[in-house]
Image (cartoon, rainbow, N blue to C red):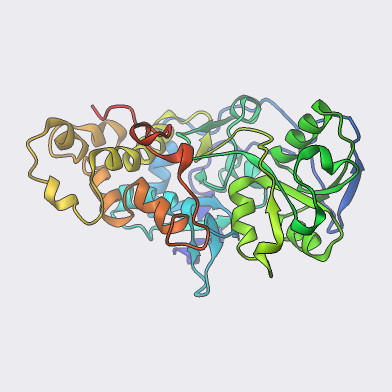
Length: 371
């Protein structure tokens, strides 16, 4: 980690500062809203924002600084959290490390800046962080009105609801009149309102500033259920005092495509993040991983040679080293390795890949050609 440069280093190279005021609860106490059949969306204020930074400025700033600043999460085991050694770990963290590996041949040339759901877009827009990799859902509003560019989806998810197993609740309709906890400043607020309005279910929405507060309230019994992405529910269930005492309902309330996000107005940096992310998927497609990548360095296959930077100038087209993909695979691994290390069968989460499998394996992960 490059935490010693944490205080002032991020101000270098910022050209325009755009401040977004996000709608949400700012009190430490939960705010109770009786939604009934009201489908009001309180997720965030949508303001058209101007582009921040000229083309190439973000990449130049990062290269001059010597490390990447990633807006992340520190409360979501499996995706972004602090381990027992005080180091950041998780699926999203590893995708941050792919950028550091591609740019500096060093996966530790990175600073993780933990952000709440409410402050994440402001931090991105003002240039406090270079990229947001924090279980953030791609939506039209965020893509346009908030002035962000979403790179390829790294995790296809859906919103779910957790209840106590002894409650007898098995479907959405049985949540009539329930108090449901939600983290403010997220799409979960509007998704919950939309679905319950659709089915005519009355409920009380209880808003909290962060996921830890939601889970604490749920475990204490002050709310009947809580909702977030299903991956987040699985992640937090594993940390509860008695994981088996809780059930995640089968229904999905929404589509939640999650992935890295950058500012509008800097196509060069957008392209870099996009193709570094895709490199992990392409490597899995080609059967290249951190253990066998050296076996491919003398391949005669033109597809592999271009991908590995052995011929062509794909990296130079992005403004980075031609062997950027090799750096990513050597230091961090391909998509399968990243997934299995953080979420797969050898972890406490044991999440099946599902939609996050390659298209050749029944999923929807697919990389455009590296040519």
